[in-house]
Length: 327
Image 1 (tube, rainbow, N blue to C red):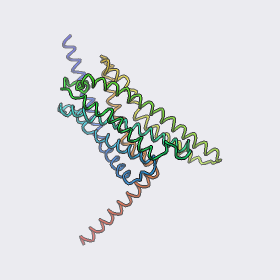
Image 2: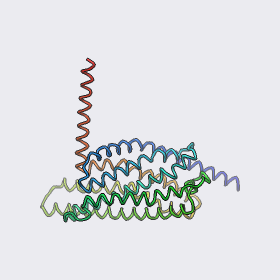
Image 3: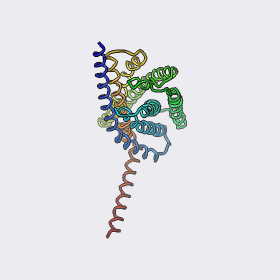
């Protein structure tokens, strides 16, 4: 019996090691693309004037995605078999916590962007509260303060215990009893927050689509291309949001139950493995958001094109100067 248990534990350990290496490789492949895209997005957004609510939310979304991207390397490195205990502690206490706070900041800002577009297209009654630039600054600041101040700081403070094991419960073993309780409440709150934002986002974009199509019908327009563009734009937003985030939040339900009640057997292993891959899938949103900015925001797209043209002109002039100097 002891031999069978040892063999089973060895098999499970090998399985988790293989999965961790695979997930780490996926993170390392994703990081350079996400970093490049978000650096370009940050570069462009810094040159945009914060004169509209959408641009204010966009700038905050770029900051959240860039911060999340910067947390990828330590998260990935901590999953490798040769990772030191101190690197794993750093990941549990800092990088993973910042990653999740940034992730939910991005999700909440996406909800605010969908609400902003709803106000402008479906309820265009002038400068109501939700269409005020001042409101967008305050709302964005509140998102950062609540999510980072209310979850990141307490989690870091309450994750200060000596590591008791190197199993899949490593991070949980670093938490104090109060830290474990806080963790459970935070997961529950973030899960609820996500589904509220998901419902809000889908409602807003469905209403926007119906309103735009109704406008086409009322004007007697047969602009089929415009109708297709509207449908495609909304489809892309909802598709990216759903593919990146819904699998993770479906998987977090059994994953959290496993953390709280410690389910035994193969079900536990598959829940943990599935959760790891779903977290990676949610990280791909950091690559997809900058592409959506180009497609959805004309001001962002025009500024990007102008800056690329200016850069190309500068490089061309520099090359000509070098050629003239060398002759």
